[in-house]
Amino acid sequence: MSRKPELRGRAARLARLFPTGPAQTGGIQAARTPFVLLVVLLLGGGLIALLVLNSALSEGQFKLDDLQKQTKSLTDEEQALQRDVDAYSAPDALQRRAHELGMVPGGDPAFLDPNGTVKGVPEQAAAKTVSTPAVLAPEALVSRPSPSTSSSPGPGPTAVVPAPAPA
Image (cartoon, rainbow, N blue to C red; front, side, top):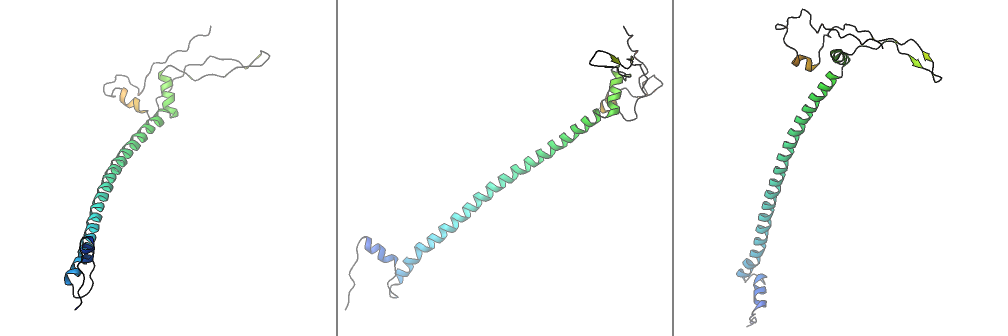
């Protein structure tokens, strides 16, 4: 009868991992165990990695949503400020503000030639009464009292600032 030699130590442990034939049922089981453990560890590690990745993506999405909301609110604020700038820089608003400050439209200009002669006849600007425009700037809506409390008959200021006399 043939007898297989007994393996000891490391060789015995390695021999148990590899099946040698159909007669050894314990060897087949021993060879499947490391493979099954490896597959289970890989699947578990993959699931944990997916969980971590999903959490990081969700956090990034929340930050993105917050930044988009902030961008929208800042864009709305910018548009409101641009509307105010446009209202203040409209020609009728500039004319009204200039009139409130006592400014009057200039007369015909006079020009100096390089030789020192004057071309044209200089005139002093005359004070003109300017009616209040139909469209008012935003500050006019806030700073003026309501028409019911005003005692003036007209819609705008009636005082005319006289131009200074020529010297």
